[in-house]
Amino acid sequence: MSFRYERPETLAQATALLAAGDARVLAGGTDLMIALHAPPQPAVLVDVKRIPELGGISWTKDGALSIGACVQVQRIAEDARIREVFPALAEGAEAIGSLQIRSRATIAGNLANASPCMDTAPPLLVLGASLRILGRKGERTAPLSDFFVGVKQTALAPEELVTAVTLPKPAPGLRSAFDKIKRVWGHDLALVNAAAAHDPGSRTLRVAVGSCAITPVLVPALAGVGASADARETGERLAALALEHIRPIDDIRASAEYRREMTALLCRRLAARLFGGAGRRS
Image 1 (cartoon, rainbow, N blue to C red):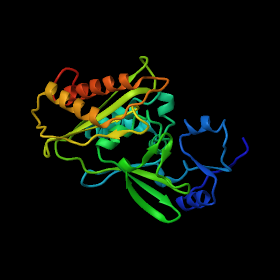
Image 2: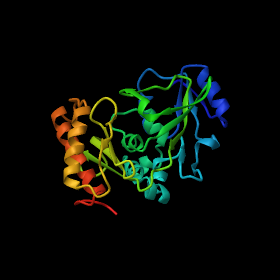
Image 3: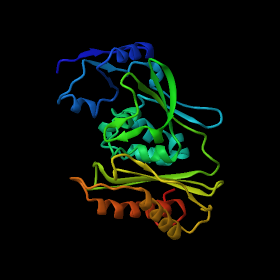
Image 4: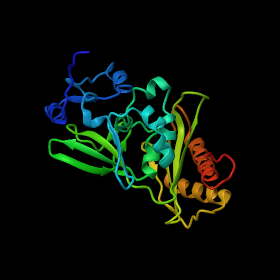
């Protein structure tokens, strides 16, 4: 490895290093350090963990959530308020790797790595997450639904970095859940994962499916779903809608046909949890 290592202490220093070109951002490093063993290697590695603004979790007075880019996913999994208000996000964070990986991996790093099987993307998509992004042209906010453009590809410009993940104030009575199918019991990548969120006020149910196509898929909302909806019927409706919008792929880990079947299964499981059927968690 022949790159230069820099450890800026401010966002201005970090963006200046990125703007100089041929640089990569280091946060948790759980994916990046493996990738650096193969070409092409960057000229500069920009370690952003020392920047204070990137390390906090904060809530606004009305209940919106901001998670700094360098917050480790284990902190999210363990945070009592996140588990209460946005359980799908806590569950997705907890599903990533082992405790050791979660204690290093960061929320923004998991998203910016853009692996199709990332476990944080489906929960954040159904919860309406946005990203705060900083570059040489200033700061911008972008919906997460526009962020993923391909396998390991995002809408970030080379000189930009994610500074925070934000979630809007939850609707009254909002419920959410996450689930995944993996090859073996224990720590493994998802063959298919999914998250769902139900807003009883608007009577809508949203699902997002990951590890199925080259990017996570946010399915259009299923309408007419009240708080007392039948779990079995709702699960079937949600599965049918999801299957209309996913484009599953064949790869070394699973076939497209298997992914279609598991997507439908996850939709049924999530509906059962959210609407009081078997498998619902407190």
